[in-house]
Image (cartoon, rainbow, N blue to C red):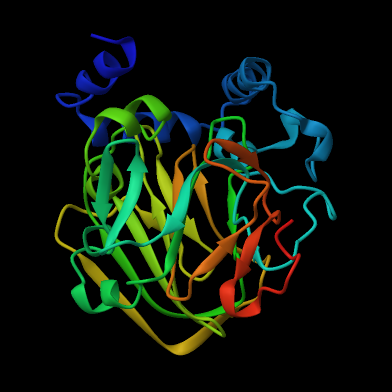
Length: 288
């Protein structure tokens, strides 16, 4: 048995939510010596580049979570043409939504309906569309931005487990992104519907949005839907949410995307980097 498969298997019996809440409590600790020790150790361990942070002094942050969700200095992430990456991270998979399925890893697919919390009507919007999955490692910038401009229409909290979402787990836990706790954000855009799914993971203590603050963790229960009668409009490149410790963003577009020829699964990307263009907007030579 490979080490990656063993790592995935030992996660099944673990108390995911309890471990995550304990880490969350520690990450909110305001005791200066402990908070500073955690931040400095993290910077060394993961080689975090503080030169691009709006506040480069590691001791200036009130909590570890404040450091982890730090803002970048202006201009650190230019916004490219077409569909922009919503976050720094690894572009795990991308491509067409085929027969209602998204590719998780080699040999593993999951349904867009399951990802969206069992909403068949919402899932049908993305048949024939495209998706992209970005994994945020601990060393990455952890704010999530809009890949295109859009108006929020509904937010859906889907309860679930909190498996790790790193490459080892993605390869060995079926339906991983449709199993984990997640926040589904539905937007209307000039290119049709778009879903931004913020997937929780082990030791991810919380997910926040700019319009509602901290959403997870919520008390145990079923799927919770919140519609927005007052429009929440976010332009391309604007922040839409953040993870308190690393996780994954899955984007689904109703309109097919022609992804850039230069990118491939496993590529490192930065927030704002152009991933491609909607096929109705592509001109000859755009994807070279």
